[in-house]
Length: 104
Figure 1 (cartoon, rainbow, N blue to C red):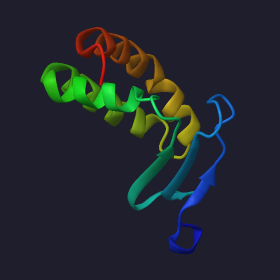
Figure 2 (tube, rainbow, N blue to C red; figure 1 turned 120 degrees about the vertical axis):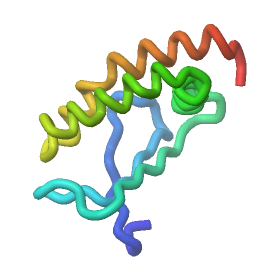
Figure 3 (tube, rainbow, N blue to C red; figure 1 turned 45 degrees about the horizontal axis):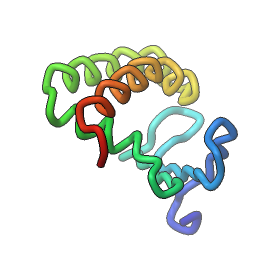
Figure 4 (cartoon, rainbow, N blue to C red; figure 1 turned 30 degrees about the vertical axis):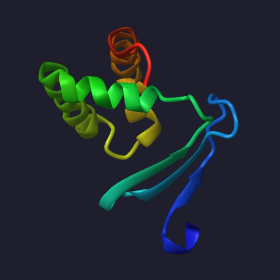
């Protein structure tokens, strides 16, 4: 994946084998479309719960969109701060999603 422009991003707070590969980030901001590829343990589906909740709840999706735009302006050149700043919202929605959808 490195040969097509992806960069490995260590994820020390997530248990192995969580691996994240990213494309589109530069020291000067985003370059074109940004991509993330996550590799996780079987059964670690938080991203899917989060996604499904946003699909089912347009008001939550709109809130998330507004939050991302606000944070993108504030942390345009600091991906880690941007990610950290939206983490609380994502965790709260994921808890609601797990309750609503019970099991994927």
